Image (cartoon, rainbow over all chains, first blue to last red; front, side, top):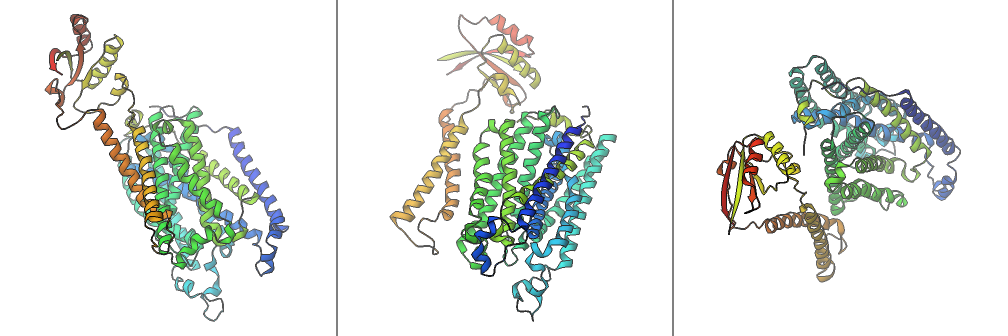
Length: 421
Length: 174
């Protein structure tokens, strides 16, 4: 097996920078429009504003978008590390040829951590209702006994410490796995492989706890009063299927550009099965959460879905149903046949749809509890997403160029080359 | 009625795959290949078309979905409407678990039953074991002999030149 190096041309890199530049321009345009009164949007809600409701400030919308995109891309980066760890622990052979792709996704984690912390420190009050001091002050008329009862967990310092701990652990394990993988390329032997399995097993335990906890912290606590025991799973399912979509899409794009020559239709087929299966898994989790709340119909629980359906003037209704169609019905029906999973064009369409769909899924988790009827999808949303996408692609592709795309000394490489389903 | 077969015995998987390709390329029809375990890629070299069973599964599943929805909507919405938990008579989210189960059940049973019918697999099914060693450590390639048409010596040579360790003849009652 020979090494295969990815070369990102200056032209491609410039495209990523152009993406960021367009994002910045759109974002600034969006902020200017929002700061000048939101155009016709504010007029439409004139009555509401008169009734004491003030349209959300543009900075709130900006912080929400930073938070939304950062949680989304951090999750995808984390899933890359998780995927590698799962493959190691399962002694998987088929995935060796594509292993460097999820591995490189983790390079976004340090940026994700920094942006997460800064966004929280600057815009914490806009994102999380529970950060307001007055909620915990029994003498204040805005005192909230329910939120005050959650104070041991939901308080500023513990939240920041948890966030730092998650990122430190994730980055630590990512670097550890990555270092071993690259050392294996240089020195060979099976020592690195066995060591990677042990690291992966430890990481999976850490991941199991931190992925749920971070989902509660970063997404669930936005709707502070509400709670759902399915939520950790729900966010994980959304991250996982988006991460799988990124892996599949990257493999296909690299293959179509002449890289990954040893990857054949069988590997693509397996990735397709992953995307197909976990779209259904996400739906299963979604439905499990929805049906129990719908059936019991306890006000404090069903408020979550009311805000997303009929509530907020039906503002989120279309996203609620689009979410289900794009993330379940579409991949389920399109990827059902064996042929579709082996064709790159089909997988390309479906993975791009899933990536957009799960961005909407996170949008639906975060916006109704914060932006309410002021939420929209406009220049600010598109601009912020483009900036994050550009940054993610630059770090990801840079990570990919750092090592051979084929892990030349992996003990299961030969098995992966002859993979057949 | 008896049929006559020529059996090529092989003891190596790779030799067998190559032999199948060469025998088919020489214009000989292979009746069946017996193997102790599933061999990767043997379907392709034997030219076996992909099974159409998934299509059956899809339509059986579709039937299950429609049947389950129809059943629940008719029963709880029209035939015997009841108020359960203050929900509407036709409360779709509550129907989903049953619909899911019936979809899976119909798809699975439909597939298994279709498979039994297509392969004529029934309790009285009698298996012709051409060579008992194909259940142990040998691969057996069976080629049907047509009286007066098949050149036995040429066939023998073809099989042997492609790595058969033995070539036997066998009459099977069909």
